[in-house]
Image 1 (cartoon, rainbow, N blue to C red):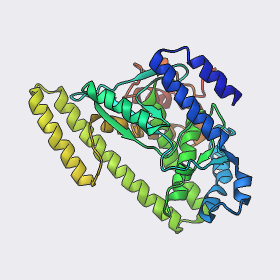
Image 2: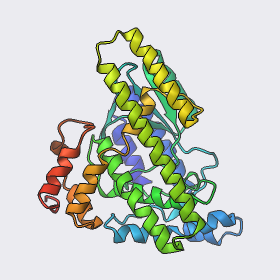
Image 3: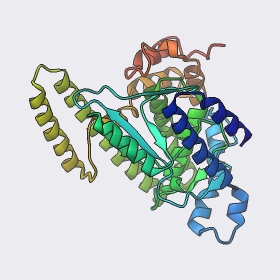
Length: 347
């Protein structure tokens, strides 16, 4: 808590919006930390629902597995916070209506980011309305997890325990994903950071489930099915992004671009059965994740399939290894590492 307060005080020297935003983030994080209970206490509490107890009992094994793969050992996820609501934060993203020029915000430590997270839904909706009034496409979504990249003692959150048999896989994936962030984080390169975390977590979750429960366990099949559906949706979103990007770069009149955009997004919503709105901000958000998969695979092969070697190699990357801030196409940086034989990090 002392570190959190010192960090918040330092960050309040930023501009008015930044100060207000960072203050609400500090308050929200403080609430999560204050409400957190040690896992042994939660597991021993007779009031803990059996399903929650069974899932939380697996957390130490997931953390040990993460460490064995070369991920940084932290104090995170040895406590539990019942958030008391379906969402812990609301993420706001914004994008130009006829290009994929994403609105970004810049803060100390993390650099520029293409989204803002709010612990209060009303504040998120107000910012979304303000951005929409500027003529931007806006998307508001609710991720199940929230992490401070290992800076603070992050607890397991109740929102990390979704319903259904896929819950254990989802919990393991989230802990592995966030552990990657605590291990490797390049300032101002969100697409790289998130894609790396997903690449590692995607490929480590099933082996852990199978090794723990066996290949025919319902939890394994449920997670594999859920992951396959997620991958198919991401592929379809990326296809729509490419189609729209080509349209926006064309010489067609804006009115024609808007009409074709509406048709493309309408067809996408119908095909995937999506209930909420889909716009450029939605697609740009998905673009931040699951990019560069083939280049990551080439690097893993150069590292002889050994995760500690891959993580050691990418931990040497710095902002200067990328062509620009928030680089969307970062494959050249990975291919240079692969060509060099998966080198150890510098310094």
